[in-house]
Amino acid sequence: MGDPAAYRDSTQIVLPVGTLEDIEVDLEAEFMVSVFRPTDAEIVRIIGSPVVIKEVTEFLTRHGVHMP
Image (cartoon, rainbow, N blue to C red; front, side):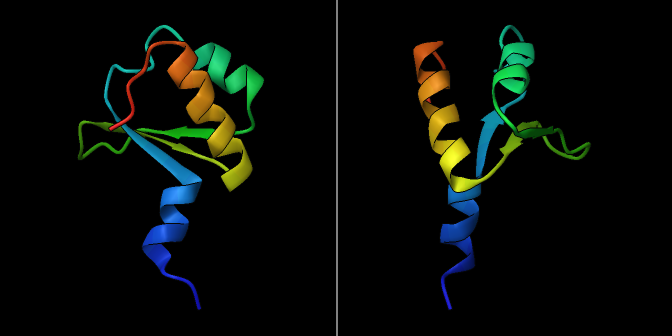
């Protein structure tokens, strides 16, 4: 069985709150992802399939978002 942390890393991107302010609408329109904001943390989770998460990473990079 695979390592759960490795699988989770390939299906989500965790960013600080506010990172997606200007591009969230475009992100959700272009990719099949869920954007989740836990109420108890200052983060945003982008959740999707491993293939989509890879494409989202490229999209975010093109839009100047630096990945942690």
